[in-house]
Length: 184
View 1 (spheres, rainbow, N blue to C red):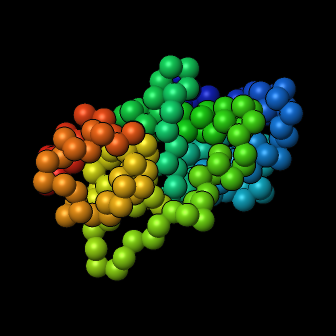
View 2: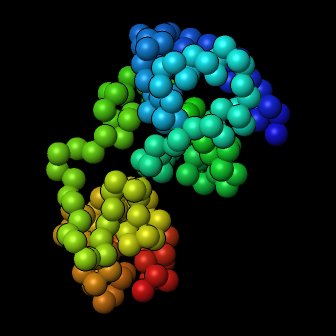
């Protein structure tokens, strides 16, 4: 794809301009980029100066493990559904900058866990909010994961025998129930 060969430095000013139009700063844009890529500010500046392509830029990145928590749409494309890994990484960055420009708190943009998120008990198979919107490795999305946690479900064994009962929980849809049933 053409974007893969585009210099990251050609898009960075567009990210900054978008954020600045909404009262955010270049420093905040760079913080978001560093969070996603694992680059230091010096490494980021080096990539900008050398005009590395998106492919080289993300190829050198040490992606944040919480990147899988980035969901939603950018330009009508659901970032969690993008199949090409490089394109998904580019869309993740687009989504983060979009959230920043929309005034979302930096803590939320960077997917920092809140104080009420539960940990998992040792030796149990549980919902993991630090790795992504999973339930026992089954990708069901953040709303469904949150609904299950709020309802007190922590493992597949905790779920009711009739999974259709889960449809009464706000955020749990038929697709999530189907995926959980297949994982049993």
